[in-house]
Length: 329
Image (cartoon, rainbow, N blue to C red; front, side, top):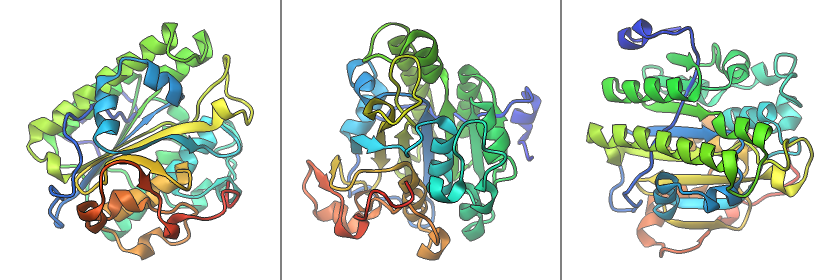
């Protein structure tokens, strides 16, 4: 594992990724990044119910969804657990292919047969720098180790935030993944509720961490090169998210960056496996890089020509993206 000197010095034998920050800038089709350089910050907030997000004080998340494309009615797979969820998001395939059926079944699954987002990125751009800062150890150990990452750091949310900010300030990454876990932990210990108590407090703390990441990008002076994606892996009900109840399966997804058509995504529901092909397409990778994926790109995120023509408001998911919800669920 490669660690740049400042990170190596701080190497707390950790593995984590974090995505802090929220943008005060709205997306528009007029500030499309140069074709020679595009970057993505992908932030995963574990266990954040969309309705709880809306009821909490989250200025950074709010600025991202209000200025970008978003849905508060996406779906995780049929098993609303972190293992299957993050696997689908980072490989672009559903449970039917990766076979991760629980948090404990990752190592015994077929996940290694499916390249991660980072491996597919490296296949097309081998010198592009990739980083992940992750707060949930199984995600790092079972999915992200040896997965095309130049930097992989794990630790609690505060460490993830610190290391991610330092890396954004000091290096030139093109694909960064940040994962926060405190919200899900609060849900399990205090209950997943609609924005109250310890669960709400964790949501608001995480939003502040997101804000520090966004501030680090703004300070770089290359904001127009970045697509910011924020997503959760599952919801929660009571103190868990074990069954197929809608509160467990409903997720949100936010896309904010140059060329993104602002507005609510309508039509086919966004699924976790749609994130990988969308990110690859936005980065300008050829269709062949995403071959074999169950997910499909979100056209309103990657189509700059559409951005120049489309009115603001609801954004229809195009016919080219529609297909049976049951496929590779």
